[in-house]
Picture 1: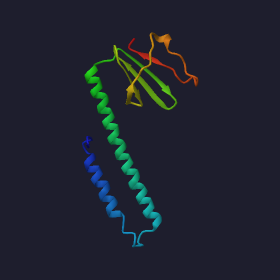
Picture 2: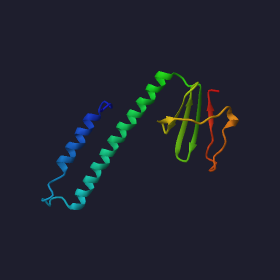
Picture 3: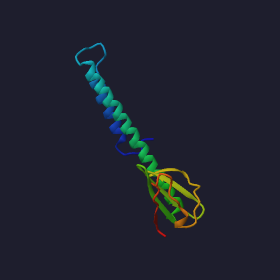
Picture 4: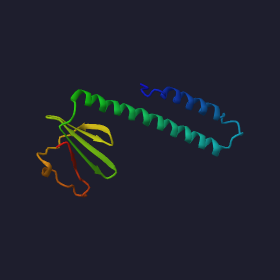
Length: 131
């Protein structure tokens, strides 16, 4: 499961530091406020590690897809709010990537550059690559 090379060491180190720094609740050597800060830092560390693992898995999924299907015939990139959307089209398949993460097959139908229309929010600005 841990695909990132040094991730196992990072997890062990984070757990070790958390265990050493968190005293039993009966001791009052560290104030409750400081204990809360340490716990919050531990939670954020765990979230960062999980995010890195998921990001690595998504990257590998995208690489595997490109190995199987080769170079796409057409690529459309645009921004929708803060998200960067990329639609890769092969002869009979379309895949949507949102911020570099494979979302699902896209069923958007278009015939030419002019076949794409702007959305209601006027954010949809396609950039065609490889035509």
